[in-house]
Length: 291
Figure (cartoon, rainbow, N blue to C red):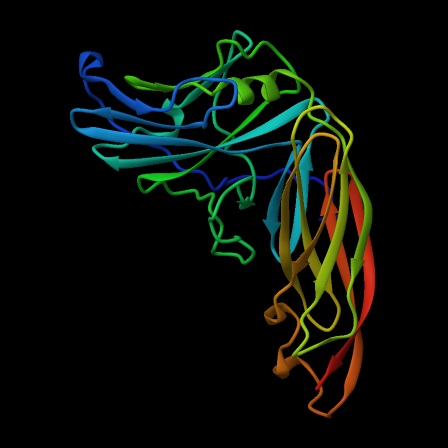
């Protein structure tokens, strides 16, 4: 099987959480569960404080494999990212977290290779390099939990639970989980040229959401040419019936390695940029000027 196709994988980057306490000691400091409320909630126990924040709902997952990005996607599934932080107290194991949806229980995904992710409305730095991923295999009091859920279902009782604690999505998120995710159309993708040491690649996206719910556009860009490796991640929330146009910069560190290139001035070569998204792969050939 080609390595760009789906693989039999092992070793997710995820993190586990929290400890134990008495239910009578449970005090919640959170915003009300409303149709437009925040999906962030902090649950405080006598010896522990746990923060849960919605981070993403999308049709697949970008993962890093060796020196390129790959996308795992299932048309019958949706992938829910929750950012969980234990600010004090003990930490439960990953297996002690369960997401309840449509009368079924789901455990965190643990069979992907280095999943990389950026939240829909997060200030978290792009994990666009190996080693800077925010989903980890070791849990140190906080990190992302990833759940693979059915495409649709009854979300009225959706809740994340762990020993003596729980977090319930707000009304907006429950609606998104209950209904099919909208189809997002990449109507245009282009790479600006020329590319050089002083002009790293810049990619321009035009994506349309024809659905009646917000959708999360995501993809990974990697390059193949004189050098080979990941370029950047793409992440954008697209509101219903909206078309978004934006630019995504790619760092030069994956393109220029003087030890692997001829030292003569003004050498030009071609870089093939691969866009890996849930709807297949696309590529662009771009001339690169080595100066």
